[in-house]
Length: 523
Image (cartoon, rainbow, N blue to C red; front, top):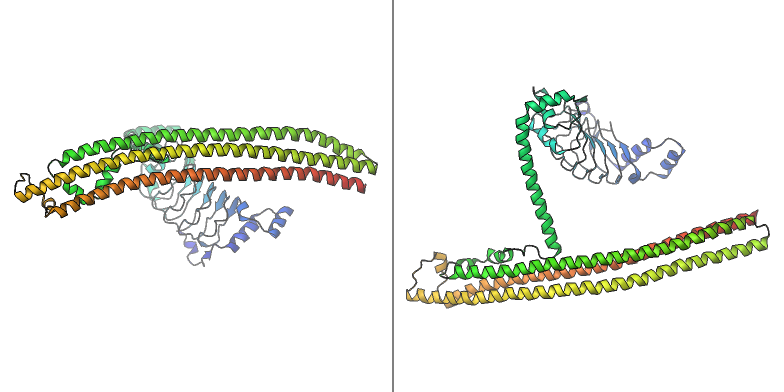
């Protein structure tokens, strides 16, 4: 559509272009001149205009991490790309380009105003992430299907829409359809939609809208159900017992068990297998329920610990604030007294006395911090012991339950082997009444073959049980280790920040005193 640019040399969006644009668009006053001399950090730029630059490809914008407004209209851009890092973008103008598809906007979750006017777009899609979208300009494109309007119903804040100049706008029912299916829209093609038009549109399309709402409600219910299932699964993962609330582990044991599935056809094995499964699933459910209870205990322990830490920090801070407030009063009085002092000897004495007060304040604040460090160290150590005891108890009991699963598997193995050997004897004697599938009968060549088949199945089952136990133990221990390490690191960082704050404050008041002393001596 941008035929004006067909004979123009395309330009690359590079750092030089961006620096020039930022410099030209900066403030013109003395501060702006100084900024241009020293260089403007791209991360500090909130608005950027790059229109009429003959840009073919969007690139090099990753440094503009705080950009709110971006103007890229009247270029020859063919693809929306390179905007992934601009997560704070609110306003984006890509009008008058050669864009054929809407894409590359998935991270722009704060975008409210999007203009794609005068491009080559034929379908409205790939805007799902733009949940805050209020203004959408898609005029002068190639959109021809009315169902594109249905897609826009998901944008609950959309109030302004432009589609004039598209084939869709030539449809006889164009305005009525949009007003009916986008009832919250206020402006269409730069004109306010009057209430009478909305009423007529609703009446005309009421059956279609009701049917669509039913489908949307059904779809939303499915989405809600899927989200609830995902959230539930995450809760179970946090307890390290996901998919143990059913037959998943048992089913996984037979999913790749070729021999076991063949042996299930033997007389009496079906009943044996069902009894095995029922008992196995009960143990899995016990592990699952126990895991959730233990997770709740760990959560209570962690919450209690965090509350204790925050209370200790807050109480210590309050003590420090009271001491500082008391010092501030004396500090102002001392500074005033120094300003009023004319005798050099007395001046030096008062300065020395106040310097001593500042040193005492520093010592007091550092003492408070050291007391807090010792208090928190004891709290952390107590928590570490408690959480490690909870984790050790959890693992010990789970391993005990997993051992019961292995006992069941061993018992099942013995019974299955007994049935298999009896079946082999009947086959050899020609006494087997039941018809077996060919691949099952092929196992009964001799005793070694059938024993190996049963053993292979047994080994696979034990491996599945062992792997699930190892996974649970490893993840639980890893969680505990990372949690404790993070708590220790957080405390180290807190202490460093607090010591830095104390030094900065004391340096500040000392500088006030030093500057005042110098000025008094000069006077």
